[in-house]
Image 1 (cartoon, rainbow, N blue to C red):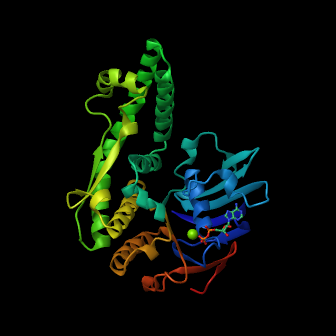
Image 2 (tube, rainbow, N blue to C red):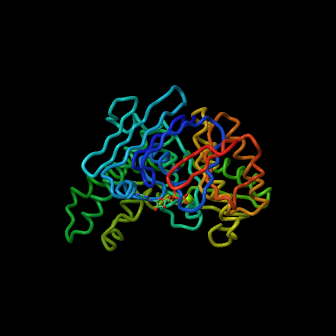
Image 3 (cartoon, rainbow, N blue to C red):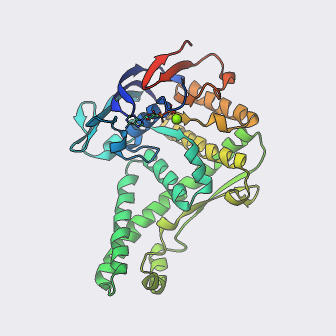
Length: 360
Ligand SMILES: Nc1ncnc2c1ncn2[C@@H]1O[C@H](COP(=O)(O)OP(=O)(O)O)[C@@H](O)[C@H]1O
Ligand SMILES: [Mg+2]
């Protein structure tokens, strides 16, 4: 799958951009604050409808302008045209000229995996970042996961609000519990199915990047022990004391170990970085295996953080993505651009919100 055309209108520091991209490897070169990451952000935005920087829509509108537009031609199984428009008053999303009515019809037209410095939170951060990682991948795997997740979150929110009241209506509580169990078990089932597969791929990726240094172990730690309904019933007294739902997939985590020890506590900085990249690589390979086409890889400033040994482990992995007729976008500054990448790539120069080809 590849982004054949990118169109930006008043997006971040781009007033107007139209660029054609072949499949393969693209390097975006430029100094700091020129707009390299903004390009990756726009592509990711079309794939997931959110910013990987966690930015709100208003902050992506070019300063002083009322709206942004982002569009793309995506070549995958067939060719598709994506258009997004956002202003305070109006949001539009269209696919092949038709307004998108259900997100499940849209998600999957463009699949991306982003590698950025914030990925370190997958290793160092709370369980929330790892749950989000699983959820994004499951959404990319099957769009029908998204409504399940939304219904669960909604039921959880209502149930917690009810528990906060001094005298919770038992009938209402029971009906939210039933909702919670219904969607929660579905979430647990899908996460439980995914993690062993991810584990195999992440372990391999880690091994390749680190040149066999340590053994990675990835294990699902469900927030449900036996059955959700039973767990919920058992936690009822504690729940009333704490006034919130204490068991369920919103308490899930993924345990990450290197040579048998928790990576967050005992890993070195370099090991944690490698592990974060391995998780993203696993995501990309899982999607490739499932859909038969590689997702578009967006790699932001990651190279500069790897030592020479790990860098030389990572590059062949990327090269694999390129060879399977996929597409890779990688941002670099002049200082950390990996010259060992070889000749077979497209170089672009990013300067103050403009993009120009820079000799192949
Ligand atoms: N909403 C916006 N409107 C105009 N410029 C913006 C907006 N948001 C960010 N910028 C500008 O974009 C630049 C940063 O772009 P970015 O892609 O993060 O840079 P880099 O090339 O370092 O990756 C900065 O100059 C910043 O001022
Ligand atoms: Mg940047």
